[in-house]
Amino acid sequence: MPEFDRGPTDAFAELFARVPDPPDEQAFWFDWGPVFYRGRLDGSARVLVVASDPGPTERIAGRTLVGNAGQRVQGFLAKLGLTRSYVCLNAWAYAVHPSRAEAMKERLGEPAQAQWRNEVLGTAVGPGLRAVVAMGFMAQEAVRLWDARPQQAVLVKAPHPSSHDSVALLDGWRAAITALRPVVEPDEDGDATGPNYGGTFLESDYRPIPRRDLPFGAPAFLGDDAWVRAAGDQTQNSVGRPAPDDGHTLVWKAPS
Image 1 (cartoon, rainbow, N blue to C red):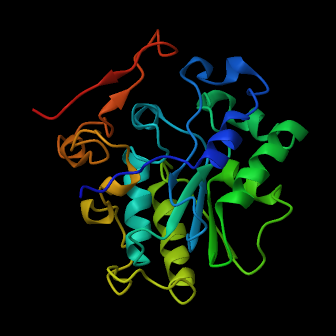
Image 2: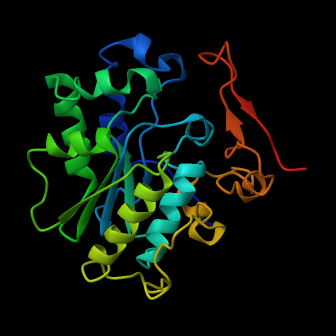
């Protein structure tokens, strides 16, 4: 049988449906709606990755962290030997305009936002959780506000996968892998003994998004932008928001 993500349980669907509107709709790509998760929601995750907000590829997939940044995160998880025992969530379910990110960080603590987000975080994890990895300043603030964070899980702060400071990104992720390998048990089909990050980000540091993380019917190339990166230009994702109508238009390219 082909693997695919069958979607959230009824209980999670009800919880996701209660997502509050953003505190300032103009600071978000609000009309595209929210994107919630990727990975296991059944409490089996050993690692919880928290990032910032979904991008355009995430809107296509209906799952978070599936574009270029998500494929970097998948490579990060692969270095821990994790092939399935993880869950990825965001500080915001709606995509944030980068120019408003700092201002929206200050609004993560508003009661409606924090209460709903903390309920999602707490419901998604179980007693087997070993680590929370907060990627980027938005995620780190969201995790700081998670008053019921499981204390058996170590907290690791790391740069966001889309960081433009490659030196800081690699240094931070290398240190995170070093700290997490003694803590996180690999999956049976995983391997945590491979190389850590080096001085440059390599294509081997990426991993395609597993089919088990994507909805049924997703095209084979969704979640694997190696062909885009191989083109060598500044574009790293197969999905983009074109100006000036980025609030209502996405451009999605398939490999030829």
